[in-house]
View (cartoon, rainbow, N blue to C red):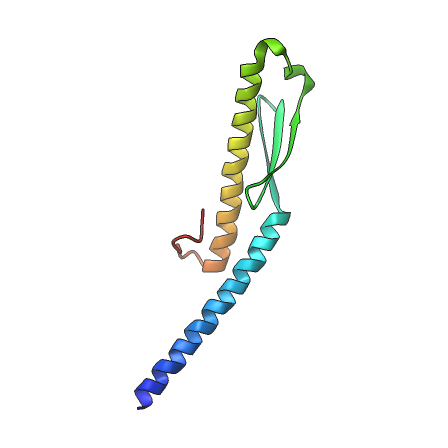
Length: 111
């Protein structure tokens, strides 16, 4: 009987730990919405900011690259800057999640 009681206590402890981790995760996600990374392309001609929830929060385009004859180049610069911003945001989120998990890879937790 004592074994069963210890088993139930361990389950309760695991449940409590899971709840604590969930609360910490919610706190980290809230904080990530306030953090952002910057990226650019074309030597700074296109600059973007992406937050920790992978939302593009700003984009700045140097007027000198706005040329109707070179639309494809501008599109490429925008795409490159956004992709780099998203990569940096994933790194930032991964670092924050590593702090939560102590370096343990939790499936579905990290992007």
